[in-house]
Every structure is written in structure tokens, then in C-alpha cells.
Image (cartoon, rainbow, N blue to C red; front, top):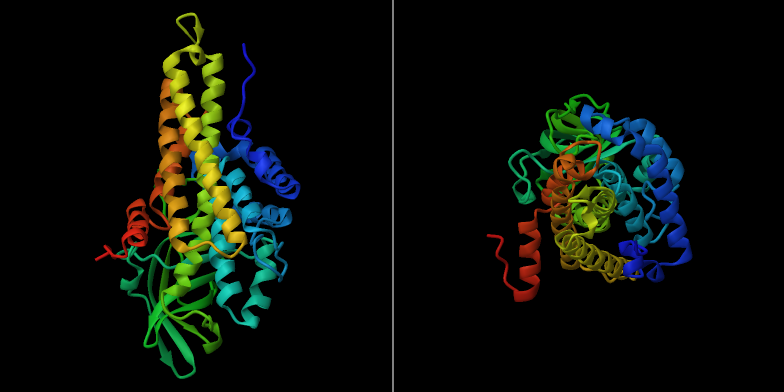
Length: 390
């Protein structure tokens, strides 16, 4: 049998990253393989995740808010963060979601828009994984159109009173702090809400068939009273939460490709060992055509992700370019997962292999933090100058 190559080798991807980036990527890969992979199928099947235990370990690894500076954060490059997301999602999208929501939504919101008091109070413990955060933007009736949000904050003397409901909130029921976006007389504003505040509750959402190894909740704000200092002073209007979403979407650009890579590597290994008509499945032309096409799309996706990472590190990355990456990575990843399932046949639907688990998870990644249709419209507006959102 001829010598085989991985997609990374085929595209010479390691030649495009530095020794430090490779070292950190490999450290995260080993952690994910040793600590998470042996348990992830059982967690997925049971619909549980030991979030607090994992958060402390991930904090010790330095990946929580790793692309932020100061306050206990590692201050790594955006590209390094992306590579870490890829390795985490190669094990499960729920693990990358935990890290993404903690670092790129909750921590980023406080780091970018918060007061010095907010930063000192929350960021060091969140970077260490000792405190967990969540991000409350999406509502039951307003996902793609956050401008329609009904959650509101009104003044009562020097305090704020928050009332409303948020939906599909990762880490919501285990969080110590929630960054909540609400409508005020001064437009949309963000608030730092300790989750032990009276009137705050976060019932967990059950019966999911996707992202089962992830905690998802509803946030209920029933006249939650906050001091004036709870408001994020530097965020005004929807640009605040949308800026946070761009941070999280960047992680998905890399992360979804990790799920695709794991599916493809599984399919290649399976096809080499599975015999059909007295020879390996991998030796058939139709199988090789499938593998070649998937490797090509995965490699192209990784090249685009690395390019976008370099743009971000130079502070040149634009929102429509993030949309390019998110649309491409997730669309190709879910197509690869589905195609790999065909190679595994009936074995592809069991949790003995990761493929159907990745495929189910990617159904959520396809639509959260901007559906594919919304990203198409962002790209279309960039190309034509015309908004087609309404």
C-alpha cells in the first residue's frame, strides 16, 4: 500500500504557521485527545457536560480568553486562538462552544466594553475557569433580527430594572455572570448581571438532538434590579453585541473545520480497514473520489481560515470577511460530515464513531451566530452595495 498523507500534509499547512502557533495547537490537541475524547460520546449520549471541571482545566491550559490582553488572559494571536478552536471542535462542537462563549462573547464584551471595575472583578477568574459567563442576546422571537428584541431596561432612581427573556444561551444555567443586552430609552445597552441577582433564573433546555455535550438555557429576567454601574459604558446600540458576535464567528471559521477534519480522518481510516468485495473500501474509485473532493474542500477552508486569521492579527479583518469564513467553513463541514457518513454505512450512525455526532452538532453551528442565509446577505451587500435584509 502506498504511503498516505493527511490533508495538512497535502496542503503543507504547517508551513504557514509559526513554531509557537504549532506548539500551542499541538498542546490543545493533546489535551483534547487525552482529557475529552475518551468521554465525549458518553457525555453526548447522556446530554451532560462537566462544565465547571472542564472550565478549570481549560483555564489552566490558557485557552479561555486566550486572544485577549491583560487581566490574566494569555494575549495570544487571533490565529493561535483559531487553531485552538479547530482542535477543540475536532473533538466536539460543544467544547468549542464552551470556550467560544466564555472567551469571545462574555469575556470579550467585558474586556472591550466594560468598566475597569467590571474587568478587575470578572476577567481574571473567568480566564482561570473559576467563573463562568454567558451572553444573552437571542430571544425566543428574535434571532437573526436582534433589533427587534423585547428585553428592556428601565431606570428606577439610580438603578436599572431588567425584564425579558433570552433563549438558546450556552452556559446559561451554570454561569456566574451574564452579559445581557436590553432595550433602553437610550437604545440597546449591555449589562453585567451576576446570576445570583434576585429575579434572574436560567432553566436548562432539554431534549436536544444537537450539541448535547453542551449546556443550553433560557434566561428569565423578572424585574432584575441592578446598580447603575452594571451597564457596559463603552457599548451603545447594536454595534456592541454584533462586535462580540464577530469575535465568536471567527472561532467558528476555524472550529467547524476541526469537526470536518475528524470526520474525514475517521472515514479514511475506516475505508482502509473495511473490506468490500475482497478488497479495502479505500481501493474503490468512487470512495477515492469522495475522499479527494472532501480533502480539497477541507484544505481550501483551512487556507481561507489562516488567511482571515492573519488579517485579524493585522487588525484588517472586516465583518463581511468573517461572514465569508463562517459561511464556507460550516457549509463545507456539514457536507463533509454527511458524505463521510455514507462511507461508514450503517456504522456511521452509531456513537462508536464520531461522524453522526459531528453532523448533528454542525446542524446547530450552521444556524447559530448568523444563519447561512444571513451571511449570504452580508456578502451580497458587500458585493452590490444594496441591503436585502428587509
